[in-house]
Amino acid sequence: MTRAAVLAIIVGAMTFGVFPAAAPAAADPPSDAPVAYLIGACWDPSKPVEQKPATIVYGCDSSSVMVDMTWTAWDGDGAQGTGTDDAVECKPNCAQGSRLANPIIVHAWNPLPATDLGCPADVQFYSDYTVAYPQGVPPWVRPGTSWTDGVDYVYVDGLPAVHFSGQRPYSCTPLAG
Image 1 (cartoon, rainbow, N blue to C red):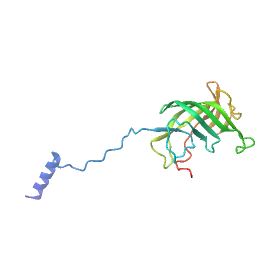
Image 2: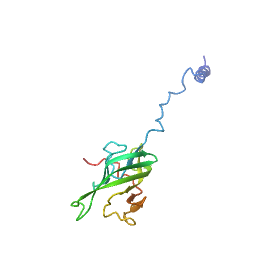
Image 3: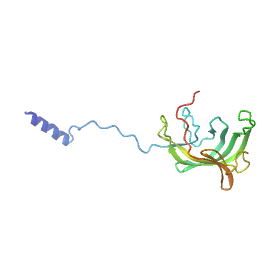
Image 4: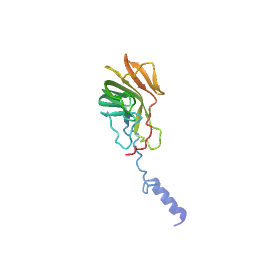
């Protein structure tokens, strides 16, 4: 049998499925993997991602913490919840200031993936959120003023509030323990 005949037999066998032309490819990872959502620039990637968390540290030095949160929504369209703002009044300074507890209404939206190296692809961060105060308000929350870029004091549905915009995690490197 000539080389040409052997080659013709092999090509014919491959064409009719007797031999696979190549090893089957590994299954592609699912493109619709579930996405987790988080609030805050103070995320610690050494801790598991928690959906609808009861506590959110949003002042990275723990000077502002949402506690006792209950959520009515938490998905790609946004998050809505109520709880208590446990914040430090920085008088005479933040280390010595008293803690204030005020009821809050939180609304978060515009989830975006983190862009830093090491950030998980299946986690998105709500880049905008408001913390509104229906009863009592910290003395530094004065609508019409700003704390810094991306932190503005506003009214939401007639309530004094803080609007955080352009929020992303500061880092996707685990915090030192």
